[in-house]
Amino acid sequence: MKYLPTPLEGCFLLKPTIFKDERGQFSETFNKKAFEALTGLSTNFVQDNESRSTYGILRGLHFQTGSMAQSKLVRVIQGKVLDIVVDVRIGSPTFGHHFSKVLDASEGLQLFVPRGFAHGFITLSETSIFAYKCDNYYDKASEGGIIYNDATLSLDWHLPKEDIRISEKDKQLPSFEAATA
Ligand SMILES: Cc1cn([C@H]2C[C@H](O)[C@@H](COP(=O)(O)OP(=O)(O)O[C@H]3O[C@@H](C)C(=O)[C@@H](O)[C@H]3O)O2)c(=O)[nH]c1=O
View 1 (cartoon, protein in one colour):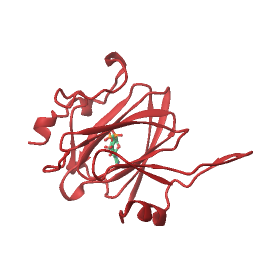
View 2 (tube, rainbow, N blue to C red):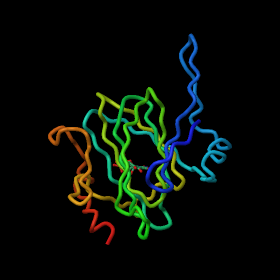
View 3 (cartoon, rainbow, N blue to C red):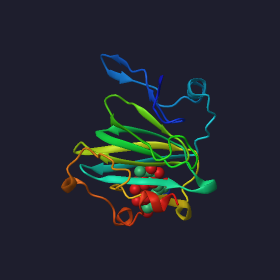
């Protein structure tokens, strides 16, 4: 596993070592000891999630607030997505900055999304399976979010506007300004 920093403090990529042989390939997707040695974090992951989506489905931007904030270690196990994170940590030197990365199942890249970040992704392939670990439990009452096409953030989701599909719930999300006021 290799540690790759991003411009946002606390947010990084992990590139797994892939062992290929005549049968196919093998990789460790999570190893607590290696994770701690590489990152210096002792994150206690307590929930694993998996979602399946079709082309153009955008989930986000989401976070949980207060004591229910979550760090996430995300990856794609089938297909390709564009993943975007936004630093919404009040007082952070990169508050309001975002980082985006195409996550392709064939590469196995993982993105660590720290607590205090909004997170979303869009499926670029025909279908995708997205898997992630969380260090805090799901709590509906603590859900927060930002509308994906917020004018201030001006995020590039890589797909034409007419191809982007979001849930009714995500259509109601507030602006970046309102969400962070
Ligand atoms: C996220 C989540 C949802 N659910 C339920 C609630 C709802 O009925 C159904 C679908 O929920 P959502 O529409 O919120 O699912 P989704 O839009 O996929 O939500 C996820 O989006 C990405 C971008 C994230 O970063 C995640 O943390 C999470 O917020 O699943 C759980 O039971 N546990 C969970 O941890």
